[in-house]
Amino acid sequence: MTETRPLQMIDAGVIGGTEQEPRLIGSECAVCGTVTFPRQQSCPRCTSEDVHERELATRGTLWSWTVQCFAPKAPPYLPGGVEEFEPYGVGYIELPGEVRVEARLTESDPERLRIGMPMALTLIPVPGAGDTLTFAFEPVTEEEA
Amino acid sequence: MSGEDVAVVGLGIHQFGRHDGVTGLEMGAIAARRALASAGITWQDIDFAAGGSDAAGNADTSVSMLGLTGVPFINVKNGCATGGTALTTAHAMLVSGAAEVALVVGFDKHPRGAFNPLPQEWGIGSWYGETGLMLTTQFFALKIQRYMADYGITPSTLAKVASKAFANGALNENAWRRSPLGEEQILSSRMVNHPLTQYMFCSPGEGAVALVLARGLRIKDLTRTPVYLRSVAFRTRRFGSFEVFSPSIPIESAPSATTEAAALAFEEAGIEPGDIDIAQIQDTESGAEVMHLAETGLCEHGEQESLIQSGATELGGRLPINTDGGCLACGEPIGASGLRQVHEIALQLRGEAGDRQVPRECRVGFTQVYGAPGVSACTVLTV
Image 1 (cartoon, rainbow over the protein chains, first blue to last red):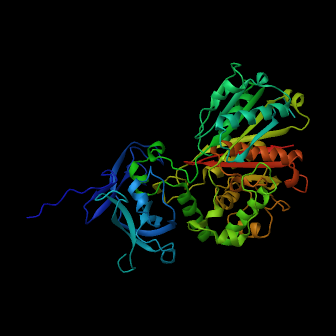
Image 2: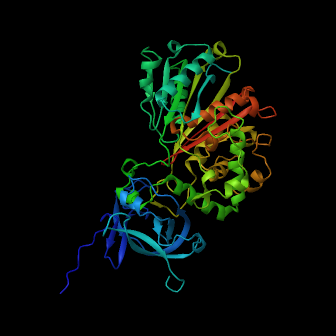
């Protein structure tokens, strides 16, 4: 009855999976096992070009965080994003055994952010870009993690 | 000293700050003329030049103002490490014997507000900027936030770094911010990126610095007070270091570009970090000065808390840092900052720093400049 509408990810080379179950697309070096995000054509650690795509884990822990308290300039932000600006959290999330990924956080209250807390991948609207989605991480409880 | 020595023999600076109606290139030419005059020579005596700006034009076009002498002039562009790169280039030409007297110049002129680099120019997709991650301020905040947790650095120490910078800037006629600010004022100013407040950040600004360098026998012809450039080392990042504009960082960690450049600078100079009397350290924000102090080897990781709280890095302390006010008080004209550091060390080692002269004899100085996306240049200077 209803068609699944095509996903509008901000960059299909960066976010895969589905709207319900998104995955970040990284790469893994066949020689030394190094995982990168986003995917690369060669390995930054050993320089091998024998690198293949890898979907990254969707859960990890907060390695560091800050709150972006002023609106970024457009470009590189979108003009609409500047207009609707509210402070937002930013952090690096350590995906165990893989890599630490930089991302927006759904939480922007500094009192509710702490290093080591469990986080899960989610999608949020691109600020100022309607239906387009970008990735973010949200805090989850220890049980959910 | 041997025939292969390289020394700073002329110093020129155009005041940092805001200068409506003067282009970056013009500021560069003014600084160059001052450096030439202080060495008692003219532009016609220069047989090699290197210089750069990030946003104010091609340095080599300043020949149209300085004179069309046919001099080889290399433009450099390496983010905030541009000045250090110009110095590296000129040093190599002098050491090789390809030039006898060289000029390096760095200048810039940035619009108000934070920098807005484009991801595409840094090898990253536009999604990174549109998502709201392409900000240098975020990187510095994320790096110091983790560092504070790992090494027990307090917000008070971040504020002390800034209050020291403004106290030193108040004594520097070429600084931009010349009003002292207390620790409380700094801590209670507007939050920019947790844990860093407004007055813990430098602001993009304007200014220019030029240096005349000479080698071997020419040194003593040009000055009675040479400051020897004992080494200059320049490095890009290794796999595992945490640098600006990184959509991801490896879990495996490695020394930063600064750690590697500093170690090489000390090794080449045959001088230990413990021998340094005075240093200029990249202080894009308070946290950068704290972290770079340890990355350069000037102290241990975590030692900064007691070092800074004790006043050791103030003008009268054991290891004065950023005696001209650093980026925090001088502002950040990207192309000029690395050479400003060397300019200040040279003034201090010559005992010509006026109101902000360190009140004890300094013979060995060090500089470190850091830029996106993970480049660092360090120097060791002696008299």
